[in-house]
Length: 440
Image (tube, rainbow, N blue to C red; front, side, top):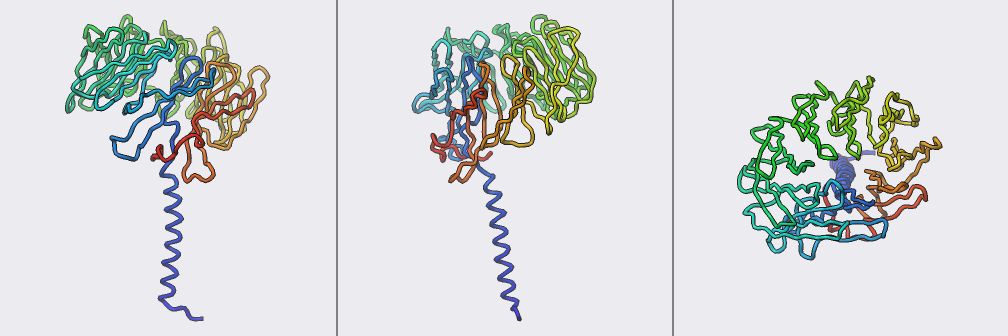
């Protein structure tokens, strides 16, 4: 049977178009998600603040963050902004997780909103700063706010804002503030990028400016705001706020992961710091700066976390723990997984350890009291877990493939693992998805 060249050419073109369509469709399918939990922040008493990013693909004038607070005790979901309020910056949360703060625009006018969810207090201040807000931070007193405001090309300034006094005071000029945070003494920790270097410093209400380091690659305050851990020239260092003492914690620090942030952990009570390098574990007493424990072992790729009672670390399939608050303890094996273990956290009384393995739709719950491991599987991929202050529940951020919907949906659930009950909070059935379509 003879086949003409033109027919062969037509067949080849059709085959090419079919393959191209399949590849393009497969690629395009991964280009968007419907995001119903753009970001989230744990709050006091088990509450959670989460964001939706509305109209992210449209004109900037139409884009805005939507803020919601879910209260598990009351089973209530509260929408925070006022009608017509535009929010372009992510909100911030106070160190005690009782207060949220955000900047907004209503008909072109600047507002700073500080909301204490415990007291039910809501303060709304209006400003005309001659610039626009870039960064925010809330102080330990739940009243004072720091703001980085742009005032021109390569011109920014840190402002001190007192809600109770209605006071706005400029403290420090800079170029590009990458980070703002409050310390326990009321001073403001900042990172200012100038001439290719990240300057780490603190400035107080009296405009006294103290530079901690001329160039850092990482910095984080401790939970109590009494010290700062930072990375300078590959050395991990510790700055004590009260006497401005600087201590080198690790020379030539090689973190166990690719990210310094993921290689250190703080206990939530602010008393301890864990540092995991490629070859050792260090547990530091934050108030004194002394080393509680130093354990030498190969740890490249290991993941860990720290509670107020114990230190946990997963190396390949094995999970170890250390009761670091007690002297003279050893790092002990807790259990072995079937596959490589990724630790997610522990409940507040330190009894249940939650972790993942290779299946992205399952979590495992290890009971330290009984030694039993329960596997819990869902119809969605698990992206993150956040524990409540209650004993037996945690939030799940999930990426879900919903029947009849063209793109994945990022959703938020509350899971009671004792009762095996899954509660939807921000899910596809309760939202107009087209408003939250974005590129991941």
